[in-house]
Length: 77
Image 1 (cartoon, one colour):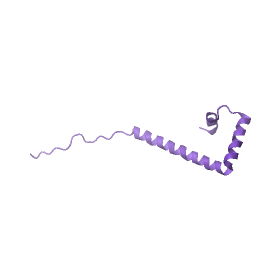
Image 2 (spheres, helix red, strand yellow):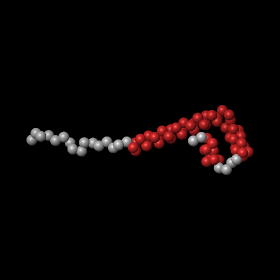
Image 3 (tube, one colour):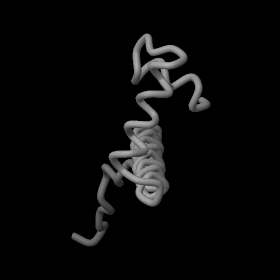
Image 4 (cartoon, helix red, strand yellow):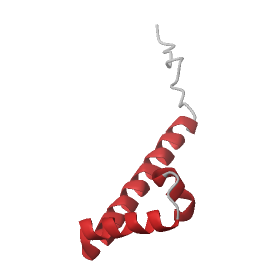
């Protein structure tokens, strides 16, 4: 998925000048130095989420290990 496909999900029906205004306000609020840090943190969070999903999927698909149901019997009586 690219960022262009995600923008409509978060920003609704913003078009053209409205989108530019929102981006300028975000730049003013967070500053040029904080935005890369925020995006880096967001990327790490997404990667950890995907890793968690993969781990859960592997755990679900892992075959169940069967324990020996019949214990060894001794013939000495």
